[in-house]
Length: 176
Image (cartoon, rainbow, N blue to C red; front, top):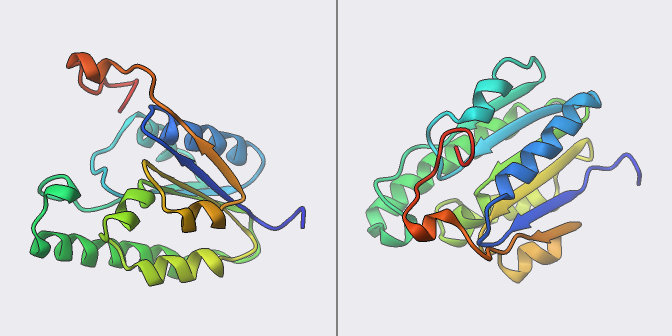
């Protein structure tokens, strides 16, 4: 059981879900893991991308830029985004190496899943049958009870105060 990869869920409305997952990525890389990060609902290179792209055992995938927040999208827009997210999800999982320790971070998969912007059955099948060599991190705001029950680690990151509330947008090197 000590060698079997587990599922981590970092969720909530506070800052730090991606930051926590990337801290785990640094720890895993330092311990000989391969790391792959897939950003759903985020579409531009960030500070961490600039570092990870130079590390041989780390890879990064970005999703497709949606025209707006998923809850403001038309049904056709959600369908297009869903098709792209399904493609990215399937491509990455066809390339999972066997016999190596792998940390896979599915950043913003919770919101992608909960808003129907990815095939839920495909995701759930993967989560319930993931390879034993894979440690898996899911991030997002509001997971269903089903996702919470499936995870081995569950950490809620709650916002008490955030600069965005004062109109301060994401700053390079801090939030992006």
